[in-house]
Image (cartoon, rainbow, N blue to C red):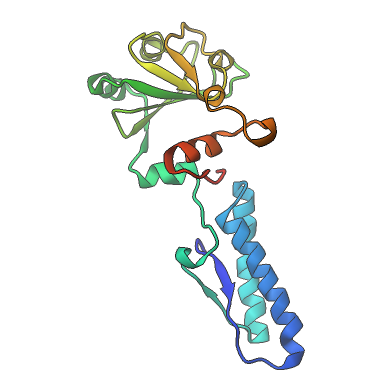
Length: 210
């Protein structure tokens, strides 16, 4: 169900034209949701619609088949999928994981925090230019000594998407950059999201929103 749908023309009686057109329109709508979903909910909806399309097509004798990405009109992937395909993996920030990060001697790390209505936040993710591991930090009363050391290290550039102070990490931040601000606004001054900015930087086109 991960590949787009298309209707194939067959020799059908005239009175079935309208039904075939409805199925074709539904298939196109499902294609857009599967290949360019705005959310996981969109993708689930598209897959449910695809199942319904097959059921209707079987009843009406209309052929529906899968087409490859090269035949579709812009199949896209999200950032998480792209990172997984590139070999990145999530790893709990255990003492061994931190030791491996320090041994790798990163020059640049990307920091993302979730649950920033609390201080420290509920979750912090750390990706570096020297490893395929993405460390998952779950702070309790503080961010912990390793994350605090990383955030305060002048020799390592820390990239945030948005103002670093808004992450409420509760420790000193040195050598930080706001990638969203550096990338600038989109057309008409609109705010640009992480999937858009990273996609354009990495491959020249936005990633789909996960």
